Image 1 (cartoon, helix red, strand yellow):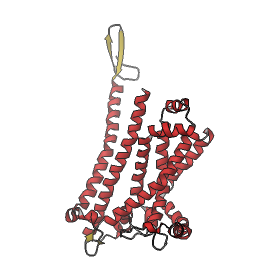
Image 2 (image 1 turned 180 degrees about the vertical axis):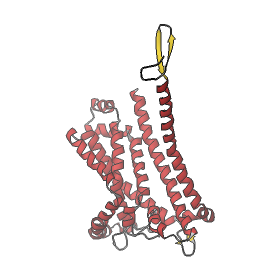
Image 3 (image 1 turned 120 degrees about the vertical axis):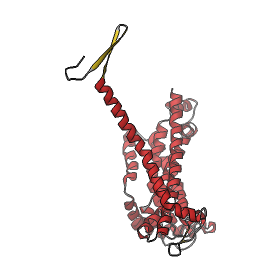
Image 4 (image 1 turned 90 degrees about the vertical axis):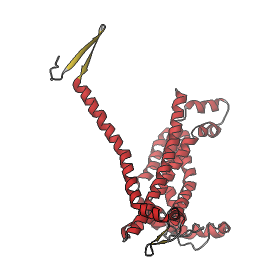
Length: 331
């Protein structure tokens, strides 16, 4: 039979019931399914294409220097000697500083918003925290140059070195110029804070209400219920948020380039300038005049790509673990 609009239908009867299947709708469903499947496959294919292009471009350097490319500190494009150790070291150290500073603040903010804040305050504060992630990196860099560096130069760095006598650790020695690994770590901490706070807040909100009520019913105070019942339940998700922030810190470029000092050497002091893999690429890619230099930079990009991919994969898996456990216990 045919409907008034011209669409053909097939009538099938089973027992006393009758069902109609519209051929036009079935075809539309298949087209829609195929289209969204194609779009979904484009994402991993694009990821593989990026990895392939960077890996092929950096292979000559990786093949020539081998594992020594990751451990050598020599970076001399004129002599054709390349070692990514200072950039890898700077990336790791600045990211660790960022996590040490940002994690307590982010978890505190998320606990306040999910457990303690009144309803009228949650949305404005949450919006302001999330807004930090929307500020462009170059704006953070400019703020760091005109505000953060003068404050670090005097009085923060002299205070850390002289007043607290932390120079014995070797982490706070040398002149207080301002541009340093410490400055890069602080600006990174501000930049990754909204990512850790957002994920942690969502994970804490996913904790079943029964967890809190059971702890309170046993006589626990509000803080004891949070510490003993809520945080242990959400631990892996919070760790996933921290690792996600680490992945963000590893790849940050512009703000770090403007504040870290850009000196390719490994120094124990946090007052010393340094380099990260991202800042190395930002500074030298446009000036690479030889194939060897360009291949070395692409090799650095490939190493950064692999590290970031692994870190973000671990973070997503940990957050997924919390979501799965929550769904399982709810069911």
